Length: 114
Length: 113
View 1: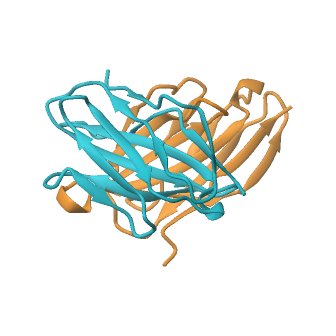
View 2: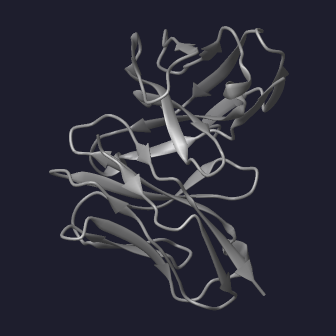
């Protein structure tokens, strides 16, 4: 059971570089999410998707982009990395129906921008 | 906007002592409520959830939480903690009709021998 898989686990970027954080799930969930976790701040929602081809902004979308071309994949793109984007990023997926309502999380990507 | 407040950022307790981690949410017509646990250097795992029905929900490792609609709370309790319970605990809510999970700031539970 793979669940939600994120790659890479760690990455160091220089200011101004770009990268894509990969996320894939094998549970056929319609909902997918990207969160960032900063110490003492909990998890902040960056973007989410309710299905293939549909994405929407969360609380902190600036500096990020997403796409959802398939049910399984939900990559997060950083175009011009900034030190403020140093964080731990978590991808999650879920159903939001009845007793199956529950989000499953990946192991996280620790990103440092220097 | 829906919000979740975890009143304690850190809770230190002695092993085998009881613990309560507090969570309050802003009022909504209906909500789904969750507690997630994050062990060091890992992702988040679901501990327990309230969707409907009985207001007292329990996890397999001895934690329980009670949905209190009048006080808009969903506090997490365990009667006797173990060293292995050391982790960060997050309260989260899906407001009625919403499509996203909103998290509190987290509570770091530290167990002292």
